[in-house]
Amino acid sequence: MFSQFALHERLLKAVAALNFIEPTPVQLAAIPLALQGKDLRVIAQTGSGKTAAFVLPMLNRLLGDGASSPRMSVRAMILLPTRELAQQTLKEVERFAQFTFLKAGLITGGEDFKVQAAMLRRVDILIGTPGRLIEHANAGNLLLDEVEVLVLDEADRMLDMGFSDDVQRLAELCNAERQTLLFSATSGGAGLREVVGKVLKEPEHLQVNKVNQLNEGTRQQIITADHNHHKERLVDWLLANETYEKAIIFTNTRVQADRLYGKLVAKEYKVFVLHGEKDQKDRKLAIDRLKQGAVKILVATDVAARGLDVDGLDLVINFDMPRSGDEYVHRIGRTGRAGAEGLAISLICHNDWALMSSIERYLKQRFERRNIKDIKGIYQGPKNLKASGKAVGPKKKKIDPKTGKKIVAKKPAAKAPSKRNTINKPKADAPVLVSQDGLAPLKRRTPTAE
Image (cartoon, rainbow, N blue to C red; front, top):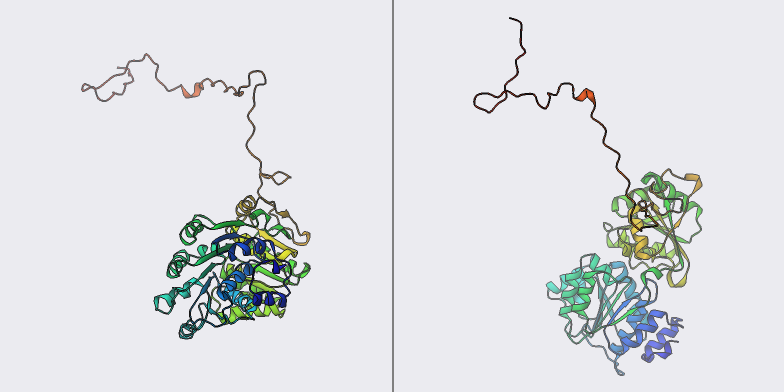
């Protein structure tokens, strides 16, 4: 029960109104420590309820001891990698803060800059993407010296997108005595460890899920394909034959996303496409239509791999294999959320196999192999695979059981030189005539009859 946490009565009222009853594992682990004012570094899978894990303690701190009037300054900031995730987080903050005076505002690209600058002076909680916030900081619009709580959500993704310097600079602009909460779905790499070291103070480290435990409710399959045209046929078959409420198909490029979108529209599927070249209005329309059920299928690049929380999204198809294990985790995290079941299918050509195998090793999992008889291709994986699917390794060394030493095969005896190759060679003891200067051999003259 959420009543076990020392939350403000107005927050408990909101939790009850939203029918939140049992805290999730990440909420149980993070909320008590966050309420104590500690910095946190939390690894938790997408869809595990981590937004509430940082929003509730943040709001509780801003409410203070019975405070009842707003303060006209930014007191908390939440940084996120994408507009979509920022918009989703704003809605969550507003839901939990519905019985308080606290106001939240959104700062992302694609919106009027002057309108945003004016809004910055009227909010308690600022939610935004690093790039646009840095623009406001450079313009002198962003004052963060009274920030009490800084949240970095999907921090690993922000660094993957090249926001490391922006994140660190924004953190430096905040009050040095602030509390910092950092959440990510994966452990990230050296870049994330550097940010943790510079931005957090003596943080508590919480890992709610190991990477190979992510999305336990999601079946993960691969289907081999001969080429992209074959993949398009497989997508068509899967959309026509799988049982799903909503589906998302990931590609690695905008060009492929647009091409696949065109193919599906031609087959009269209700589908939207989402990638970085779409403006904010089109991106919002695509997600809203998917959430409302006006369309069942979304074709997207990795811009939608984070921050897309859609009920009933139970099928993910990787048209292109993601380029890393972390990206794979974020993609399939769109389905199987909060304990629900889902299906993730990756289409694998010959040039995808090595990447797929490396992701299997990273997750310490083996994906289910699947064939579709109606459109089975020629390619079934590398030729050096046994029936079990394991790669055939080098031959074992033969060991002598008596001595324990390696048995070395004897080299075959050298063949005698062919007579044909020695016919024109001079005899070893034949004299060689040399010119008077001793430098060049003279040609032997064949004696002739006088």
